[in-house]
Image 1 (tube, rainbow, N blue to C red):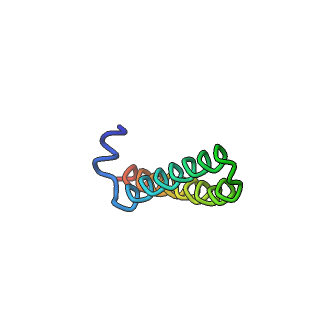
Image 2 (image 1 turned 60 degrees about the vertical axis):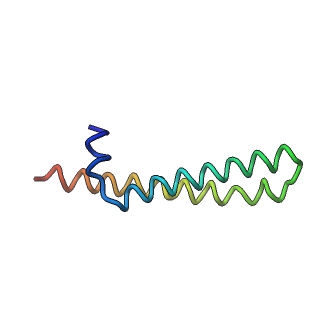
Length: 74
């Protein structure tokens, strides 16, 4: 089911998923660099990136649910 959904998923869902993964990944890397180097500003600045990534992830879940619901009614 998951493979079938990904193959037929709308482009907006794929963009949301990859955008969310990218932002969360960059945020985590910046947070690790900031904390290991003692740069508290960098560590704090990475938190909004992680937050936006999580919001995009939630938006992707909503898009996927709407798409599945729309296709289920047929």
